[in-house]
Length: 292
Image (tube, rainbow, N blue to C red; front, side, top):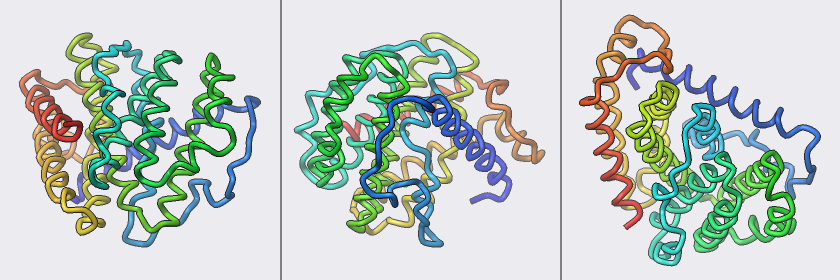
């Protein structure tokens, strides 16, 4: 990673840590329940070379997007009816598990609770292809989700607990690469949504959310490279995200910040439509390849 780029990654890390803390604070005094295994907490120590657990969750990304005040556009979601089609190989299962996780988070934070129920089912179906049934079937997840459907704090906490359990199960099954691929899918879906909403609403805060997500490119690339030999499709995924990263890095305002070693204020960045359109096309093409 370019040394000057470390400043961007550090800023993003702080922002997502703060977002996670805000979610946790909002959930205090809400419905409580136990994680089946105490090691499911995000304090699992990764191997020295592994950055899997430095990646934020789909919920954290969606929470940052929520704070931008973006509207809900249901046509941007991946069709939940396609879940069965992804039971072809581990890459397709994992990447679309991540995509559906991002769609679920987008629905949750948009207070679209009936849609959230449907996307929780899509996550469960694609997760079952990866052997993650237990994470969705334990603790009466579906019933508790229905019971608390109108309480955002509670349903977010339920979904967060499911995500922790899936991470733990993949860790125990020595499938860290599935976690990384799934996050890449969630990240691409979140970018796809954010870019489309920004194109429609031209909101500075939404653009700031897009820039925050794009700044995660180097971390995702590093995580994927640590598992490059796990699935044959990972090489092409890395190449696609590297191309997005190059385009992000070449945005004039980003380039100036890196060259001057200044922290980037994502909410005040000025980005030309021509610069953003190139990135939008790259994300659109990558997402289309993932969901086909």
